[in-house]
Length: 475
Image 1 (cartoon, rainbow, N blue to C red):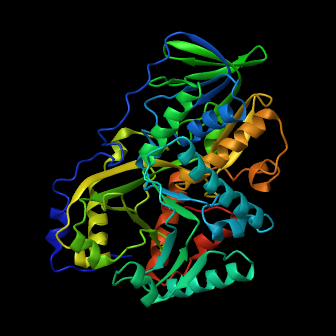
Image 2 (cartoon, one colour):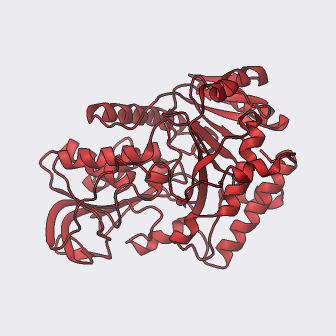
Image 3 (cartoon, rainbow, N blue to C red):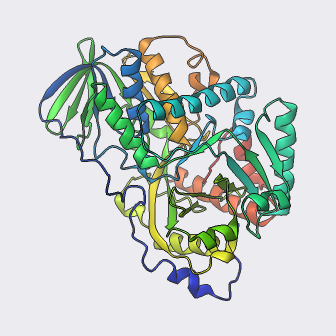
């Protein structure tokens, strides 16, 4: 959705004048106190490294599978402080970063993947209820919207293909009038509404609720405890931390965008920085001017897309579009704040919703996404099956990390299950090349995607070559 020339251009820059450069979800007076750091030696059956969704789900499910299992979780900062507390709060059933990506990569497994994804989302909803997690969980569904005529045709073609394959249950194609009846923007040309496959939630409160549930079940959680090294120790593994050490029979790595303790895994992911804005709460009149009575999550259909949704107190979160890869793949706090992107996003917001002129933004923030070349998670083991890892969720990990936790636990148990039998689980994506080739390739791909958006979606020779190789780049 490209910005138009606006006669009141200053309005959207002024809208950012009071925006705090902190994630809205983490700016919460109910934020729990961190658990103490590890300052001694520990032993356990299972050590989980990482206190985001991936690690928290792994620890929780491990205890639910076997309440007698001794589980320790270590987190380098605080639970949920990174991607798990900075995302848009879209919890999707898709395990494959959307149905089109799944159909392209695993056509023979797509029905099973869709079934497992739907079951996984149901299990997340059940866990939220079972553990009384107050995270504003709403099963509202999501709408992919077209903002250009060619995108409307693509959405209709996608709907017809999914219907032919028997995958359109709960999915509805919306023409321009129908989509604007749901959410009123003059830029909307069509929509594809997945009524059951997406939930909205408060992502930080989900992470905090999962941490509390882990503690309640007896998981020993240590925060401000980065894992520094991983090495064999007898029949198990040992992880060194700044002030202590953990010896464990098995280790699950949920570090995602941060450098993996298994070094050979590192080339499979790169960090891509994503940014978002949050408005002040909308008045009843402003909310009525755009409709949105059914509170779905929305995303537009461009290559450089936006995602947007309503919070529990009727703020609009507006994010996406820019996807910034830092040369060398470094993860640094300085990349979390990018005013030039905030200004761009604000302009796009008021182009989408001109009836909201005068609304101000209260928060603006960024964070790193662990991106892999196939856009969806990959899995594996190391050290003769004593260590398992999952990574590469590429921005759709709020729901899929629970599935990844189940996969890691299956792999550590040495079990062949319907999950570990999947080609998606058994095979890895192509790794990224070393620098300067990674930065050059990603920069060229971003330029090509922007060019495609400006030329009716037509993909140039570079993008077609990347498609044939099974590579790509997604914001």
